[in-house]
Amino acid sequence: MLSNFNQQALSRAASAYPGRFRETPGKMLGVTTDMLKAGQLYGLGVLVYMADFMVPFWTAWEGFNRLEKEKLSNTLPIQSAADYYELLQFNLQIAEQGMTGSLRGFRDFYKKETARAFISLLNSLYGDEDDNIPDYAANLARLTDNVINRYPEAIRKIGGEFGFHFDDGG
Image (tube, rainbow, N blue to C red; front, side, top):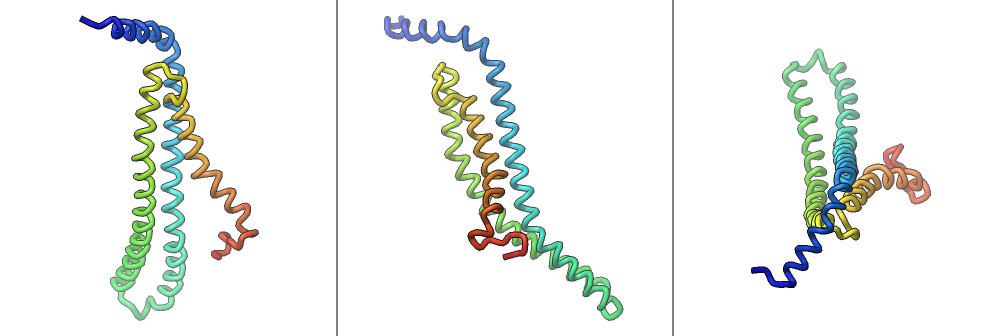
């Protein structure tokens, strides 16, 4: 047998659900859109980060090509292929080290975010309008956009004032 208090709590909870069921599809569409946006921005950020690490490879590749033209008649093709392979391997090791640090940071971030997401989900399920899943998803998309797009752009804009010269390598 349920106590009087439990019956009242169940009755209140059940009476709140019909209104929420009508709102849920629209909210979930917004959540899905925001989560997809955050995921796409995250993927873009990873690709941009990897591309930034590969720029030195392509610069060195050009230098290697010039040198290869000069030494082509004096060196075996297998030695040239081995040199290119070593260059690629070196740049991939640098990229790996950079990615490992970044992924560690992302992992730590998402460890904390998982708890917030779960609490937001529970708040949404129980009808709490504060810190619900649509708000959480929108905030996550906004945060990811800021980190991937807005902050780097702001840094580029003020870089010259503070001695950062990203365009010329310094």
